[in-house]
Amino acid sequence: MDKPQSIAWYNGSFAPPTNAHINSALVLAKTFLKLNPGKRCRFCIIPTSNAYKKASIQCTQESYPSLRNKLCEAFYQVVKAKAATMPEFIDKPIDFVMETHELDSPKNVNAYESLLFLGKKYDLPPSEIYIAQGQDNIDDYIKMNIWALIPPLMEYPVIMIPRSGFETEEIWKAKTTDYMSKTTPPYKDIEGYLSRVSIVKLAEGEDKYLYHSSTFIRELLRQITEETLHSKMDIIKTYINETILSLILSSRSKDGLLAYTNISCESKGVTNAKARNNVAAALKGGKRKTRRYNNR
View (cartoon, rainbow, N blue to C red):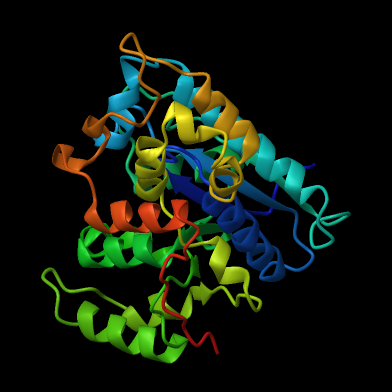
């Protein structure tokens, strides 16, 4: 495709990539395309650097030095292949790419540096570079005051997927306005920023494919044994794409451990109790509890 006129920045650690990541990318891309009628669009998948100081990334580097790059490439190829079969994208002016400027960097690249890089590469202003993320990430950016400390970040439009417990767009924006108005340093032009936030409208039932996390997947891998692997394969594949799963299952450390099963992959080396309980329920054939929301 010719040089894009608008791009989306879909960034994450993807440690490991999950079916939720795949479905989130496609849902975000559909909204991105709708927001830019008549423009040549590019959806950019951007894995964070291996130098990013996050346990789930660092724990794989020594024992599985090439695995993360392979998983990220497989993740991108799965998204691209699925998009090629979806009516929303067929013969539409959009393509999918994996940008590796963060992944290849020997140091951590923050969000602003990453966005600046893409702006220069594609010669696009911030108004044509969409931050495409889940609500949890957007809320974290706001609560960590990242966008108050780096005001130019607020110039970038946002496409946000609601998470479990989301009520309505009006309520979320009201709560966000209240929070942003009381921070130190203070946020400026809150109303202008929120006007650039587009919240994805999910189809009925579409949300159930978006709510399991990489934390859940790592705990799932820890609770699976060689004896139970075959009998639980159908359950596992509801959370991990088959191509990505095969790469993980073919990985072994010197100690014989699968990638992501070492507890060092978790923050402070502590397993997440909620994830542990959700995985146990899933493996027994139960359903993980998620709160519904009204996406009006």
